[in-house]
Length: 448
Image (tube, rainbow, N blue to C red):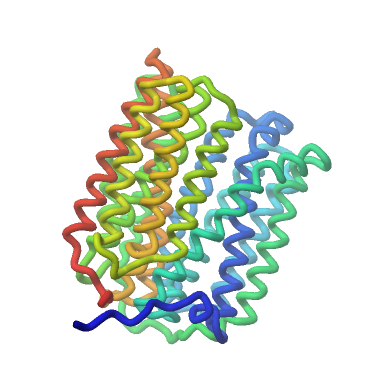
């Protein structure tokens, strides 16, 4: 009986020029995570200082919407523009956006800077994932994507308290400014190693439809406006944005892939279910169960820690199939969250934390596999990288809009917080079920 060769080790994927390039990418991802968390931590302080709470919601969503819009055009850019030039363009845009926020005299400048940084993030995300697809083979990619999950662990644990301390000591401008320096350093290191990425100008038109991608961004923007509007028209806009956005995301991914598309669709739905629940964890603990920020932090950290540790060792040959098991575990996690909110008290808090950890285990099991399999298709690596980045960013923004928008609308109409949260987790469980069904029926690409 034949056995599969052993999987690649960390030393294998970090060796040589491509390993140095990957380390530079990971450093930049770490710095970007620190800055993203810094913005989330200090944005309320920033808005209060600049008297800009009317633009708070728009600023919160602006980066994701801009990244989605940029990713609509990224694939053809990557086919025609050399990697170093793409990196320079993305870094220049990033510096401009970060400076607009750091030196902002009013909240509108922060909003505009967030939009510019979102454009830069969309361009660089497609570049980085496309490079991974070109540099690493089908057995190495799951290990590489597992490292991305690990990189987010430290920022998630130390980022919020660290940036809170920096804000107290020297102000919010320093809190969002210092990670920007680290981002620029990381991108400079990418530039020094970018020659490791094979590239030649694309000769065929890309399969990605920019018009559909723009439609996703516009639908999310309309839904975001509706979620912040307590009127009847606001509810109509929210539901229209959710419906149109979901349909447009699916159309964008289906049109972009050549051949088997179910792994990519399952990946998008997995991200939607996980991040939709993740964004509501603190709200569930604090508002739904009446507990403390400390307990909420425990739930958030528990899920991220489980994801990082499980994702560090992907198992593409395991039985049962981890790409299918992962979404199933996220379904179970959503059910635990529903039960926890219903039970209440200390038992309810413990159940919610257990649900968060279970969701992290599911994400760690499936994320590296479903995000790497599409590279084995006939679609060019640059296009696949753009599609994977689009799937994660757009699906996360869509799920956040769905979960947060439903909560804001229904709770604003008098529904108890616990009832709304349970309803939202039921919807997210359905999304995770769809992800499991697609993963279970997919044709595994590029795996032995």
